[in-house]
Length: 401
Length: 223
Ligand SMILES: Nc1ncnc2c1ncn2[C@@H]1O[C@H](COP(=O)(O)OP(=O)(O)OP(=O)(O)O)[C@@H](O)[C@H]1O
Ligand SMILES: [Mg+2]
Image (tube, rainbow over all chains, first blue to last red; front, side):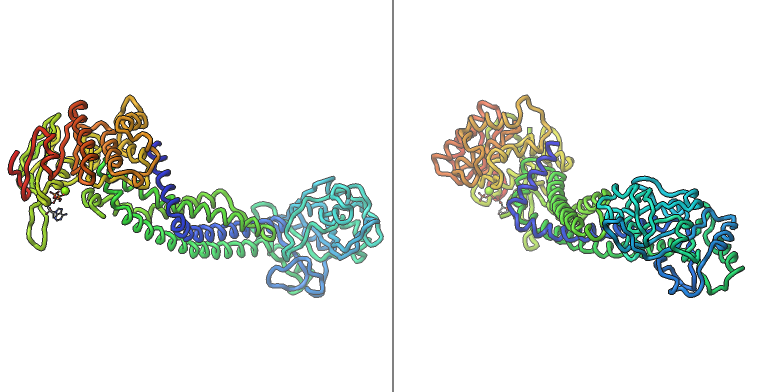
């Protein structure tokens, strides 16, 4: 312990004496560590973002939309984009007969003007069944969601997203039990949802006004739906589920009239591509760590040469080969660790800034990797100079001028 | 205590073998005060480094307390240098970036010996004895030559060695200061019963020694 303290103290004093050199050498490691850490934190952020999107899409879900599309787009797109047909309650009833189906959720959306009486705002109406809240993981923060009963009885109730609640009623909590006017029809707000985030190109679920779909028939006189969300029972193969849905709908429509899309699958493919790209980028960034390591090796060789006399003196008064080896190895590791710590600090600051626009974050594992890797770099690139120091013959070292 | 038998130290110079030290047979006993005398280049320092286990012979054997040192590992040799011998050099060989106290304590860091007093206590009592206590926190290059040599002697003594090896300890000092250092070494031999081996090329320095070894061209000519 005393010995370790002595090693640390010795190294730190040498750094103090050679401040400029120490800083320049650790700069290499600093750059390497911060680029690796930043890329890792961006990768983590991306993963988190995609996971959030997953959640807002729900798992085990497929969406049935009119028209023919090849891949998933925003499900908010109006019927015009997809062509002729719109679904109705008959389709919902027929899809409910599929035995793998857990929920069949009809969705009607419309851009509306929502008003609290005092404030009014353009918002999106999202009319659906009570299953929508479970289906796409919407949770209420205040009050409660509407129920099957509300749907059947066409109760004049609404659930609102937190953003629109705050806009119209100043505070989310104040929206509860207030009357919201949608196109001059009044609904009582019975629930305010938890924030979901998202909104990068995807739907901004936090700004929606949710109504029981039967209640909303007053705003949807044709009783048509833009989207039907179908949730499969757990452990059902989604591909099988999709085919069953297609079969069911083909009884009534033509092949090109509708599409059954699976956005979750698409997202998971995107997510794995991004994680591969991220790994490659981290690996490339790791090369700069190697360069930093070579810088350390270089400076350690210089240090050893400068201190041959000191090594000789230490050997003469009883330092073993190992003592000398550890002394210089410790110095290389500290040099590298200083760079690593500074690199982490820089990354923390950058991540803090970036977090305003992107959910990048540094986890404990990243910190551990950064510190572990910088120690390892110190050991790998310090061991050769340290060995050179240890292998000096005591007598030649002490006679060195 | 230390026994050299048929010891050679040879260097290859331009393809020729040059023996800095030849056929040395020497027994050093506990408590002796020995002077090694000889002209410059005669091999005195080489011999001292061999005795102090800083260097190893190319031929012959060196035994310390009955053990053949060529059979010892690096850590065993280092331990002997640390605890058994103490070096005092002509150029002092202090580490200038460490304070006087840190220099003196350096051998204790590499030591596993247990003393009743802490290393700092021992250092201060030795510094007091040699009149350098006030300089504990100074750096060696700020001291006079005599003070530096006393620091070096303190460092040599900190682990209670059995032998002090002093290679021209007065070579860089004026006569008066040199005399004080020699008196100090004599005291250590007489009062502390430490074996002192003093290397010098001046006959008047050697008068303090009970036993004189003359060396010329690497060979003992008179002992
Ligand atoms: N590493 C070496 N390589 C070759 N020759 C050496 C080496 N070390 C010492 N010598 C030679 O060995 C001889 C003895 O050197 P040494 O230093 O022991 O002499 P010395 O008696 O201590 O001299 P001085 O009184 O000047 O200090 C010298 O001729 C020197 O040149
Ligand atoms: Mg000499």
